[in-house]
Length: 383
Image (cartoon, rainbow, N blue to C red; front, side):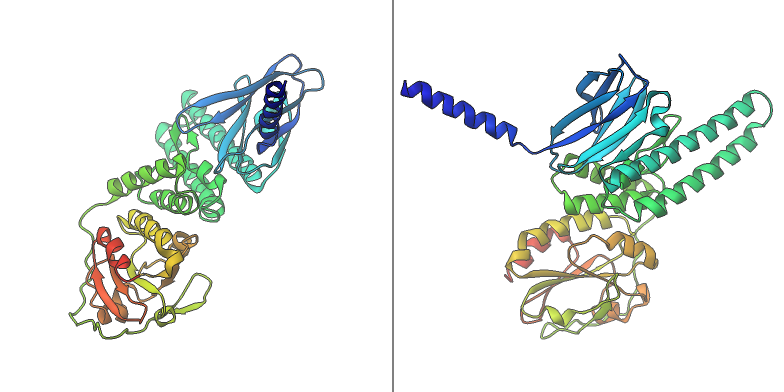
């Protein structure tokens, strides 16, 4: 008898735990779709998985739920070949109301900013595809020659990309909709290419942000890999060496630097006295910068709680790009507007970037490092 009671109690505990599992919900209506199947699907990196489905009645009501994702993830509702894309990053309830006769363009969606932004991006992509289709039709019926059509198509695509870059990717590189925007396509080909010198900056901005907030996520690692390969493919020639007259860096004390961050707040290197610090000279737009920051982030996360800080100086010539690339960095990132002509480079005898200096708690420069793989041990020795 006691054993039976014990088993019953354990079953109730398990059931309660399952019921208390954190979930998100997707609900709403799809009108004019009676007796049709509505599918709730997860959009994986390389596939789509059906999570649930329902046969709609005359009212078209539906309700699905899923386990709360550990990091922002992407889902869709599919009716036949028509889909509605959305993202989920918590336990929110996403509400969708649509008409089956105009599912992909006429729906409303509520639940998060990203869901709404994804809808906006989707509608822009659909409009672009329709415009490209019209040009192709005009070529086929003889109303337009192919060269003119290609020129017009290039103009349309360039306008679309500028809009998406400015208003979505660079505006919110840490948002799910920025990641979504990177992988939109026209006629089966991606609009943004990691092998394009301009587009790679978009991949770099989103990859940096994702890796900062969700370093263990599969999407973060995958985008990081795409970005690194893209940077390698778009880089031509040798890394430019900054030619600076030689001078000696004193190890007996610290030559102070004071520069502004993206909010205009000025930070002095000497303010970090009492902490072990790394002074890092970089060009965020250079080849290898993303990989450099990914490794730097691992070291930062490892030692931050032990009194460690990074003072990173960007020498990028483009202030706007620096602000975008450094927006979500967890350490101090300041900008030297003089770039390669900066007196700080002369002072610290920096002839190439990245170059790093490990600084003790007493504000003394202890070691120069040009290979980031040596940084971990150098920092550890000062803690």
